[in-house]
Each structure stands twice: as C-alpha cells, then as structure tokens.
Image (cartoon, rainbow, N blue to C red):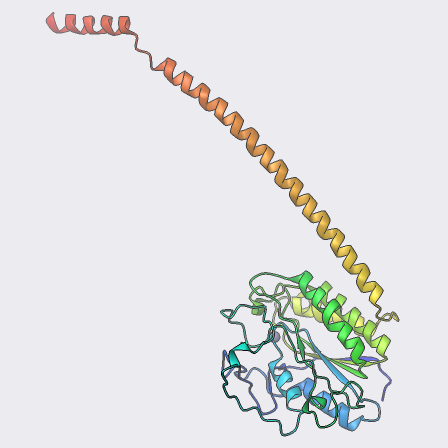
Length: 336
Ligand SMILES: [Zn+2]
C-alpha cells in the first residue's frame, strides 16, 4: 500500500538459484543448481509487483549481493522475452566473436559454475524510453550486469568499488520504482561457504545498504529485501549471519534522508586513492628500512666471520715444544 519504504523477508530456503523451470545449468556444470533452491522468491516478487501493483510499479531492479552467482534469477529475467530461442551454429568467423570478460580463471570451480563480469547492455523499460525500438528483440530484453570478483583471497575494496562505481550509478539511471534485493550474507569473511571469496563484514553490508537506500531516496523507490544465503549461524545472535542481517535491517528500518549523488562517490574515491598512496609510502619505507637492516647485518656478519677465521687460525698453531716433551715422557714410560 506504499506505507512502508522498506521491508525485509527472512525466508528460507534461498531462491536465487531456481530458474523458470527448476534447476539451471551452465557450460561448466549442466546440473549447477542441484536443488539448492525451490522457488525464486525475488523473481516471483518482481512478477507480482509488475502485475498486481502495475499502477505503482512500472520498473523493477533486482540487486543480488550473495557471494554465489544468481543464475536462477538471471534465467528468470532472461525468460521474460517471449518466444526467443537460441540456435547455436558455427561459421568460419565464429572464432573472432568478442565475448564478455570473466575475471575468475577458467579453472576456478565455484558454485554454481557460472557468473563473471558481463553486461548484456539490454534494458527492460516498460514505458518505452531507452528501448532499442519496436520489432527489435532487445526492446523487451532486460539488462543484466554482473561483476565477477576474483577468488582465492578477500577483495573487500574491489567489492565496494564495484557497487559504488559500476552497479549503483546504473541503478540510478534505470530509476526503478521498486528495488528487490537478493540479500545473501555468505560473502562474510567468517562464512566458510565462500572459500575465501570477497570476505566482507557486517560493516560492509551496512555500507552497501546505506548506499542502496540513498539510491532509493533519489529515485523514490520502495525496497524489499529477501534473504538468500548466509550459513555462519554458529553463535546464535552473535553469529556472522545474525550480525550481518541486523546491520542490514537496521539501515532498512532507519534509512537516512540522504540522496545518492556522484560527488560523494568522488570523495570516497579520492579518500581511497590517498589511503592507497599512504599505504604504498609506508610499504616503501618499511622495505627500505628492512633493506638497510639486512645490509648492516651482512656487514656485521662479514666482520664477525673474519674474526672467527683469525681466531681459528691462531688456535690451530701447533706447539712443537710441548708436543716433543709429551712424546719424550711417553717413550720414558714405555722403556722403564
Ligand atoms: Zn550463496
């Protein structure tokens, strides 16, 4: 009814791996979804809002910050184009086709085996603005933007930059009436399900939620956040999942009135650049100090080694007089 600005749905099981007709496969894994999700909650919510509340909601954006690729949601969004069928075939020029960049290496195996940086450059716009034109199949195809984060170690700064500099500016220009969030908290650094991917904390979820609410303020959007992954439940109320959900809901329930603006992003970028420069300077100073220390140790070590050599030479000199006296004494003892 438009009374609440934001809502959070604590639902389980998660839904973003469920496609339009169940599981979703990928090139790397044909049965990728493997039953982890039953119903795609955000896709159902988007369809419900666009049909039941069509007077209020004409454009819906879905944001997904779960550590795993929302392959089911992407398949549902892709399936909104009616009757589109892809028939693969090869031509002598097929090898030259430029694909989207994927940051994770091809050997990286991470559930559900799909994802990586891509931008379909297509836009759903029910009002018609921004569409590719009538008759063009792209006019009905939704735009999907993915940003892949390399695995193997935490990448918190890159994660923040991806949201702030890539996703959220696009969200602002899309100007949605409703923002649905696939709120997965399994990118938390204490959650073992992410195998060291991303590694954020509840402070980062709080930061992201604040920024999403700033976009919502600017676009006058409503926000519905729906729980996805997040498996670090050990510790109950003090667990990583509980703390992350609390930080997220706290901002949803008490958002600031601030609107998203580009200048704030630039200020954060400048601050980060200054911090990076400061860190690089400190690293260079520490390396120089270490090199000087090693050089001093080496010089001291050489001097000490020289002393040792000299001492060994002195100690090794034979006292022939004493040796002669000793041999004489032994001979006398044998003859007596
Ligand atoms: Zn997940």
